[in-house]
Picture 1 (cartoon, rainbow, N blue to C red):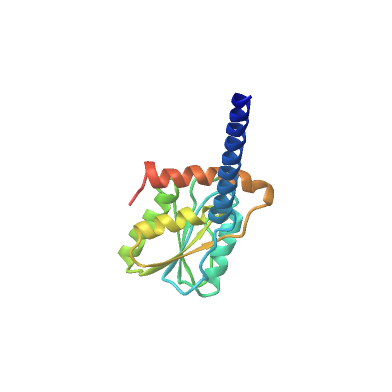
Picture 2: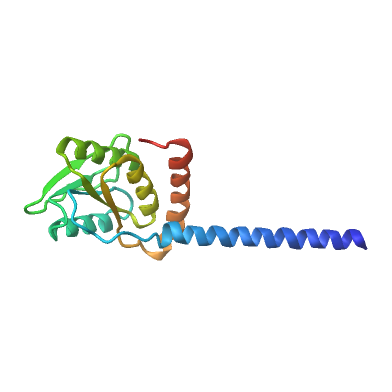
Length: 181
């Protein structure tokens, strides 16, 4: 009888621990990727638009920001997604580039090199909604000037589970395997 109650206690404890770990993972995922927060746009030397899925959300946000006068330069990553054309914005210098490596770190490194060459002391990064946390980490790690990371609008709700899983992997890679800068 005591063996059965020990097993039952062990199972209940294991189930409670697994449930608490799952709840913590969901809460952390929501804080980091679903509602990542973002800074308010402010006047900067350049806006960097990262490439990725739901590109039209990022592109529209970045173009609106430079069109509204937040920066005189738009650094636009054409990345590796098909059918991404370099935008044209009146009275704004638009620099389209293909990052090497073709990941977020390559985009940030391009922006940092551009900033050094052109004496840009502040940048605003327009990241994919779920990508905001990782973009913030990389920009703070690589750029010594003032930086602001603004998330593009969230993609459709059905896309968020994939985005969260992808970003967990990309964030762990950025932290552990490929820190960059």
